[in-house]
Length: 468
Image (cartoon, rainbow, N blue to C red; front, side, top):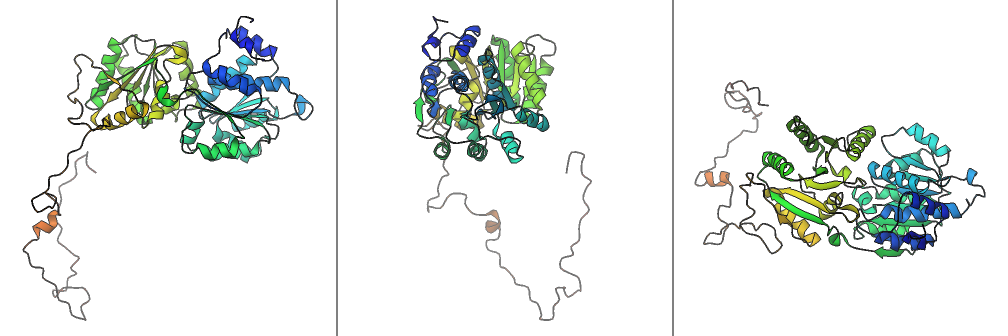
């Protein structure tokens, strides 16, 4: 591997051999920037876009350290786990394990996987075998710490991958708990697509020690190789028809469709399967958080192997899904913020390839779309599907921000808002309110002896089947 740029890194020969077998020749920018610093043992804080090769940027220095430095307990066989990688989702955890196994294929290093959905007792047994590297999701790892399943006092390297996503999922407390259970001093490397998360300062102060900061590009500068388009839609039924029209005119190998809810993803997957049952073009799968781990893994493997070519997913697939050949990402529902949008479309156009991202925008999503445009400092191209043009043409007036301009209520001549006031108050104008008289001995009954609460109830017609 003498002609490889990786030969410029002082990596262990066993890692170089694995890189040569895997045909790795030229490092990506994040690898070129992070690997030399990681090899020094210094803490790292790295901001880089999805699909930029961040996994190899921390796995190679981590494995090099484990291969070069004997376990501090004196014997490798008697030491506990020496490296821990925390990731936000199961899919990303599985992807990182594959990378670790690939780069460690010419050495003795073994990697364990700790994620929800797998047998807790099996994972406890795996801990007892002391794999050198553990890749885990924070929630399940925190459970094992609570049960005393593992001892992290031999940890030499702690890695937080996609740290911003872990914070978005509310896993910050678990991350800090796990880090506090790891030995100090240690090397800690934090990788994220954005370094501007509001909760970052607390995490970095608690976990990192004088880190080297590497910021290759911001969220706003990412995905220049992805064409980003919008198609205006009237309602959900119109969006369903637009999907048919888009797939009919767009050439693709694999496609991802994102929805905001599991119910929407399930409905849409069933619809696409029904509509394409007689064709060879669409073979659709489903991916969301309510599915078991085996089901999710099966869907990913089918998409990777070409058995299906369309997956309808929630944001569980926006991180960690690294599949070659995803040509198009479709936002059936617009994501709730610019960061989620960036991670969704990052499933295409990976490793410098060209990609396409299309978002279906209804009137209710216009302002959200405008906010994302402003956040990313981009302008989405507007696309039309012939014969399926929307009646909705966008807002009649827009603000400087691109959002729809609302209409203000007209004021009357006397300065009061036109139409203000309760209907009940207007109805009672001019009527005199008569107070009822009660004697001190009145027990709440009227002169006729009846309770005023008892009223004559008119019989109602029976409810229809669709009422109530």
